[in-house]
Length: 139
Ligand SMILES: [Zn+2]
Image 1 (tube, helix red, strand yellow):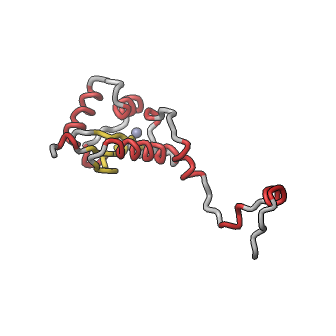
Image 2 (tube, helix red, strand yellow):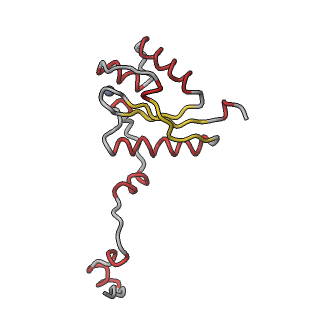
Image 3 (spheres, protein in one colour):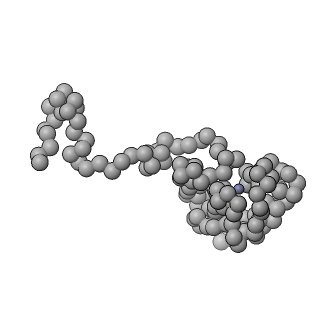
């Protein structure tokens, strides 16, 4: 198995505003960091992180202090799910840089954040049990 078949989920955190950027990649951290520096120097909009650094004039720091690993896998399909989940999770907690807000959020992931844990008796509403004659919960 070569390195090229290893996929990495990672999060870059801006040390100035503490907001994060979530992305998957199939190349190594060092190579990716060099690409980001290149994007920033060339004012290249293809990197959301570079756009963020340039727009807000926030400090750029090395991968050692800004990047952390989310997931390591050999399956790209698995990593796409992780990437989407972590992106949405960071967005929900207001920790995602605005530049990465794509608007493509998955309703299933939102359920994880929005759905309160309910006890079994809580699902019986008066209206529901009246119309369907469901047994009322015993207390
Ligand atoms: Zn920032």
